[in-house]
Image (cartoon, rainbow, N blue to C red; front, side):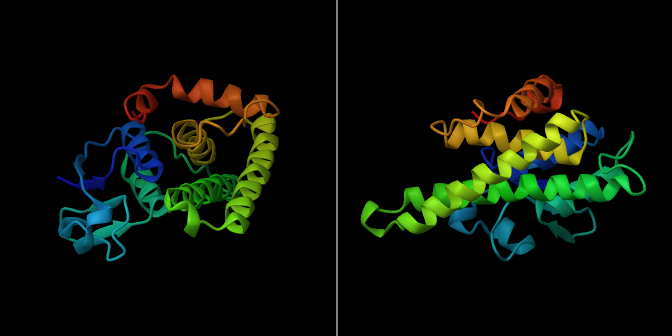
Length: 196
C-alpha cells in the first residue's frame, strides 16, 4: 500500500490527505517527526519535510503540490486541476494559497524563537505578505466558489491560520473567503482531516 508520511497539524499534509479522500484513494497515513529527522521520512525526503509519499515500488514523491497532482491523476472523478486553459488559472490560485501558507509558517516559526532572537522586520514583512495574498484570494473567491485545487488549498490555509494564528482577523474584510471556508469545511474530506 502507498504510504503518506505526515504530521496531523501540517496544512501541507492536510491538503494531500483531502485530495486522496476526494479521489477515492486509500493510503496508509504514517505519523512521523520531521523535527527529529525521522529516518523513515529522511529516506524519502532529505529535507525532512512533510508530506512525503512512499510508493509501492520503493520510490517517493515530495512537495504537497506534486503529491496532490499525482494523487489527482491516480484517483477517480474529475480532475481537481481542471482541463485546458482552466488548468493555468487553478494552478495560479493554488500557488497563491501555498504562498499564504508559506508566509504563515515562516511567521509561526519566527514567533517560536526566543523573543530576543526574533526579527521584527521579517515578522512584519511575512504578516504583510500574508494579508496581501489573502486580499488577492478574496478576489478569486468572489469570482469562483467552485471546488478545485486552488480553492481546496485556500481553505486549508484559512483553517490553518485559525489554528495557528487565531489573532489574525482575516474574516472582517474577506466575506467571500469566509463563505468558501464554510462551504468546503462541510465536506467529509475536510472534516476528517481538520487539525485538532
